[in-house]
Image 1: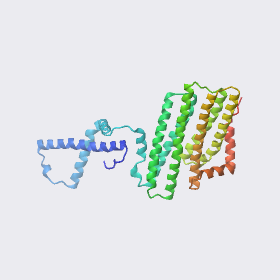
Image 2: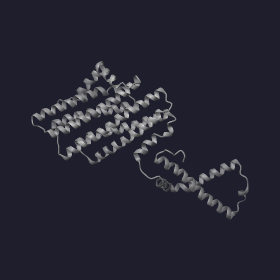
Image 3: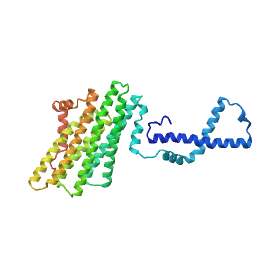
Image 4: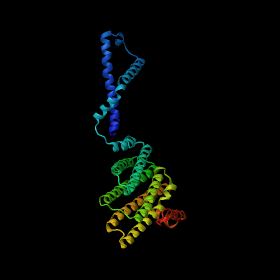
Length: 349
């Protein structure tokens, strides 16, 4: 029970299951023991017991308790749930990892924090991919999943951030300090990615409510951008979850291509507007979509830059890294041209 102080709801329930097991076992078995002693008048009760006898009695008590209570395990679980009410599923999942009792073992606490951040990465990138899909095919179930993911991402950010701040006050090694700094820096970008998924959902709802439909050419060009953003999310997730520097190095060239695609698609819309092929209202929605997708790629760039800088230089000079990699890197230019060709807006017809 002492160890459950500060634990999440499931941790408290687990402690209560142990407590109820012992209470019920003791009440039932001791009642039977004294009943049989009254009936049969056991003489050994008045004898002194040695250490082997204590061990034997304890073992027999535990075995009989298990045999007695095992058939009623579901009822025991319900009793614990009644004792500790609530169903904070999101919070329980996270606090189950971020146990404050582990703060005195920083290496373990950091590994738990990283695991929680990896779960957050998968959650946020998957939500953004769903929001891209809902722009073409609106679905209430998917919309609900996106909102749930955004709420869960907020819980992740608060829980991980608070845990890492507490961990920072402990006696950390230099490498531990760098890892804590990296995680604190990145969870903000991850949460913002999830926010943009909700913004895209709102654009999809506006298109559905106002019956806004883009032209075939606009749809084709947007699909090119969607594919590019989906890939940059996938690469970013791989870079962080697997600590893959090679994958991280691919993010910035693709981010530059996303910026280029955004500007070209916006320019093409203006040209269509001048030809009266679309309306101002189309332009407002399109601008919101383009802005959100471009900012998502910016957050991916921040995460990848942080991974590279912290791994190579133990610093967060992200702007310096971005300036250097763009201005003096054959590899960067090569990847940029490759992605530019892959995500060309030119029609294949």
